[in-house]
Length: 288
Image 1: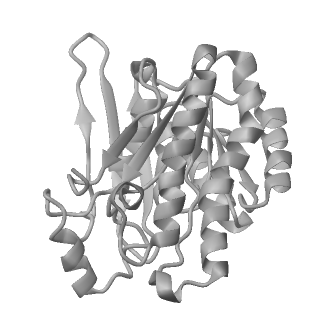
Image 2: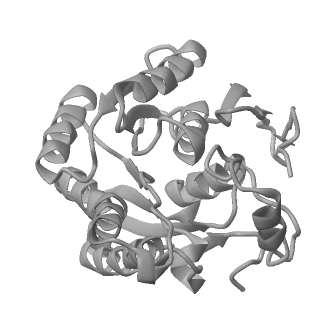
């Protein structure tokens, strides 16, 4: 299943203000998101969002979506080239809206330094999206200790490290939104993903615990659990695997990056102010 070469979404508000956004998807070796926006209302104007794993795929789509609604973006990726590319793409549409940062989220000390730099550069953080993640899929009987450790360190410890780096600033502000990107694998388990499922299930537990700790400070913590989404990671699946996956999805299709970005934007918005400690599955009904 391919993402349509051009997908447009328009929404007309019932009141006198109109909201118009156009998102364009291009399917290729690197599934990205390009957007043009013309908006009379921007939900995240004067807010700062930190998005990890924003160099490509879902993280890039989230960063671009939040930017299209007015947010300033700290684009975090493991590689400098990817973070710079996404930041430049955002700045081409919304000048001076994004800055790139390169860090391995599995390195706790390095993340604390980058977090300090982001806060120094932007002065605050209103939204943190912990999206960075990797896979090392294989059956448990064949999984090496290294395969286990690297996935847990990146997917789970990485989210903790960035939360730790940003949280004190949010507490001082007495406001903030933290959205952690889990997976359908963390909800129901998938064969060959014991390490990945453990990391993503761990994110859910961590999110609920931190949500309880900081709710009184006006900070919410929620989780988005994507199913199979059209990205460069899923584009390499062979036809047999894709058919098997589609057979488990009631909506009979893979999702689009914008499906996840829209869910994140909702949880980051004032409309979700009374929602915390929750998991929003965006999986076409796969986990129900």
